[in-house]
Image (cartoon, rainbow, N blue to C red; front, side, top):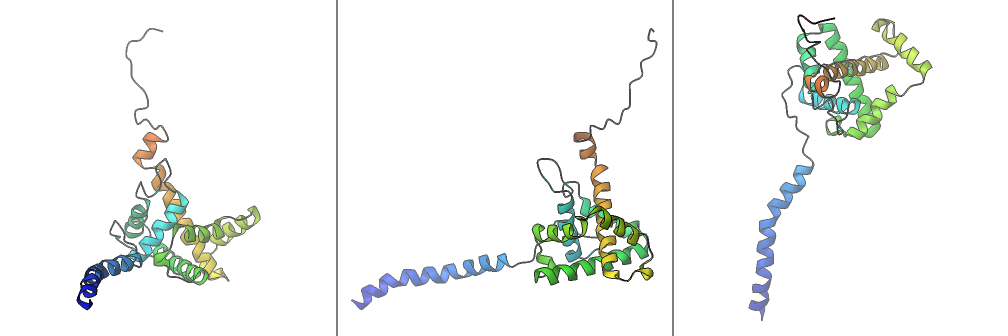
Amino acid sequence: MDRRSLLKALPLSVGGLVATPTLLQLLSSCAREKQLEWIPKFLNKSQAYVLEQIVQVILPTTDEVGALDVKAPQFIDLILSDVVSNTDREVFIKGETVFRQKYEARFKKDISNASVTGVSIMVSTYFDLSEEDQEKVAEMLSLDPSEISDSGTFYIYKYLCFIRYYTLFAYLTAQEVKENLLGFNPYLGTYTACTTL
């Protein structure tokens, strides 16, 4: 009898031994950091991931093309790498650092695992303002950083406004958007010679 019960239990234990590595791999893949599909030129991978999330909040992909479809994060990374001054780069990085700290303090998790929903809440905190607050922000952004008492807020707004500006710039100048959404025709007219009046 003991041999019979042993033979019945043996396939279950062998199945458990075979399935254990597969289950562990499945569970560990859930905690893995999200991967980029492109290699940043100026930003590190964590900063590029956060940039992708913010860009996706600004112009999400719906039934029409979004900012990720026209590669706005790659464009912004290229702008930071090749076009803007060192001062603007430093302001961008300081803003990203403050944004990261505020996100992690609010949601109690690392920003490299941020969801679009969490980033959307953070972005709306800074952009869903009354008209009076918008004027205060515009006035603050026109000042020199040394004149600002709350430098963290200043750097966050510089960071988010830079991303918003270049996201819209990349989107509106993309060939796919110009031709399919805006009806852009690169040929302004036709020339017909010798027409009667």
